[in-house]
Length: 295
Ligand code: ADP
Ligand code: MG
Image 1: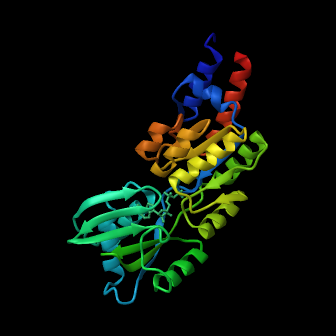
Image 2 (image 1 turned 180 degrees about the vertical axis):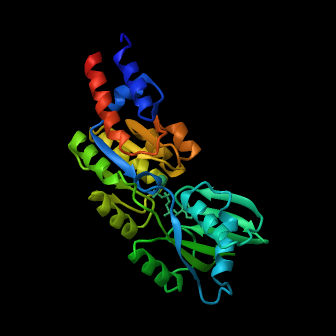
Image 3 (image 1 turned 60 degrees about the vertical axis):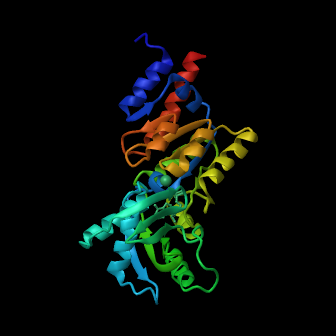
């Protein structure tokens, strides 16, 4: 046809399940030479499930009460971990309490008032919990050693329990990592807010050797900016609110659409609407070919 190459590339990408927001995006995608991937929802399916429910001694809570409390605080969150906690409570037929004053902090967790008490659910290292030798530390460490994502539950500032969650690697994760490594000549890097041990275990399964764990959203963006200051042209692939700053900073940003947060979809240059990671390397290849035809 006589369609301009970049436009043809957009149409072609669309047939493969990727929505590119402009022809300029295809241009930029064709130039990327390094890749950073988010973990939860990007390398993984983004549908984690609760594997462990551990009320702490002295909390007065049993497993069901802990799960119901956490789910009541989480049910307004769109984070994959929050969805998993709510699903686990529903599976057990537990009634959720109304939550007021809900707030979510990306990369950290949520806060809500449940039955008149302040409940926080989130990353153990990020919530303001009483320090050393508190009983939750051993529970968190044991779960993380087993490759779980541990989530701490606080009630009125006191730790009352820990939940363990796990998420499956996408079936095409390893092939995608390998293909992106071949295309750019550099091994892709994993950027995650999750703990180092869970991140490393999953990264190894996907063939990723460089892992940056415990990152806040602004840390992910700073990593991208620093690489680009050294001359890299980064492709960032992410799905969450926590990925939005890095997607914005990147030479090209792609959001995983099906489980993606609204902010990630808005910020990214392109959105994978089909639930396949493997479309990304073929999109980069397509963009390169289109660029060569334009030049
Ligand atoms: P990732 O970079 O892997 O996508 P996030 O930055 O979204 O991870 O989250 C980092 C960590 O913050 C999680 O591992 C979890 O401990 C905590 N967290 C964030 N949001 C929530 C939430 N809604 N419920 C529980 N934990 C949360
Ligand atoms: Mg994510």
